Image 1 (cartoon, protein in one colour):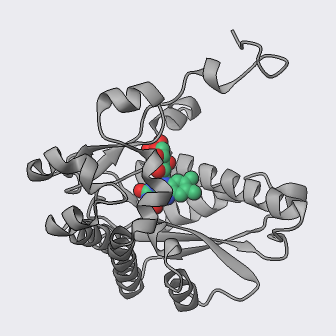
Image 2 (cartoon, protein in one colour):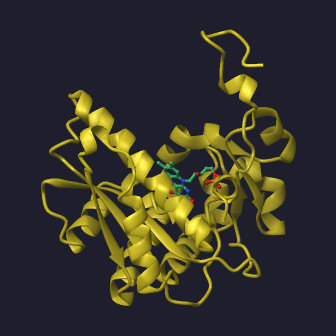
Length: 259
Ligand SMILES: Cc1cc2nc3c(=O)[nH]c(=O)nc-3n(C[C@H](O)[C@H](O)[C@H](O)COP(=O)(O)O)c2cc1C
């Protein structure tokens, strides 16, 4: 696949993957290509864990599902993230950012704004939204043939030093490389961030994977081969809109139009 095509085609994979193992050859290629990413002083602050063991994937899936339920039941999530949610095509066309909840059971549609709000806890519980989302999350993770974990050395990740900032930039670079390579191989990839929102759950996974104390577990992804025929989760979103380059950039100095 052409690089520019891969950049545009790269999308978060929200649905289940094809029922097919990821080949060792592809796993090694993902790691090899990712290792070519830039890092400050070529420090290569990342380490990878490719998880194919079904029991380990099942355990992480359970934690991810439980984390989703807890998060949905906890008003804090909505307080923090409500600003990113869009509920109509018009809304997302206007802002050209955030995620559009464009797929949900018909019975929920009239209540969507109430359900996904800081004060929507009761309505959400009535429609069993936390359970639906938690079950979907657990099933999605459990059915993934590959989980991919990226860790960052604490030797570089020192929050009070500039190297800490650089190492986070390096992590972004390695994640994008990984994502582009999955795209070029006909694979998909999705962040599993919810366990990171619940104190203790992230640590449980990190401990389960024997990650040593001098490394921070930064990101977990589920991966597999994409099958466009597979149906979407019960509640789902898209976020393909992008802001126009005129809004994102300037020429020579801040405030001067790029074109
Ligand atoms: C740091 C970070 C955390 C993210 N966490 C999640 C997540 O927990 N679940 C998820 O489905 N997507 C997650 N995403 C994906 C973004 O929602 C997605 O990249 C964005 O909406 C743009 O959509 P696209 O990837 O399809 O282009 C995360 C992305 C980043 C960079």
